[in-house]
Image 1 (cartoon, rainbow, N blue to C red):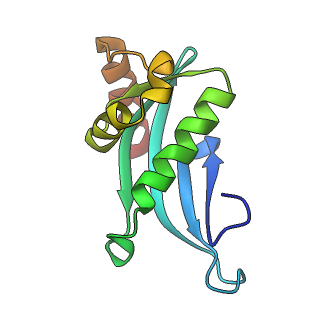
Image 2 (cartoon, rainbow, N blue to C red):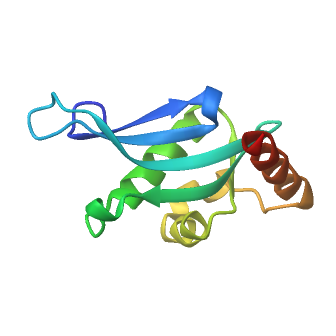
Length: 120
């Protein structure tokens, strides 16, 4: 997704990937979606997917999740699909099955800890 209108970028300091609309001519960049995550060791827990309602129905959530999953796999990490969208997306893409880890209590605890830290 590097030369397309829509690009995905990891923002590690915010524990999220952002979906950027670069505009028709590539000069106007605005954030239109995100995938929030937390790392637990070498496992990346994907817990929230969102795309602006203005962009609904364009398949952008799927593009976002695919770019995120590809990045996670390229980094040698496993995927923990906690977000309902990601959890529904993964079985439709069995090519990633070997990289998926079942959610555990420590994953949920890590999400809660991150959300509490963000609220401060």
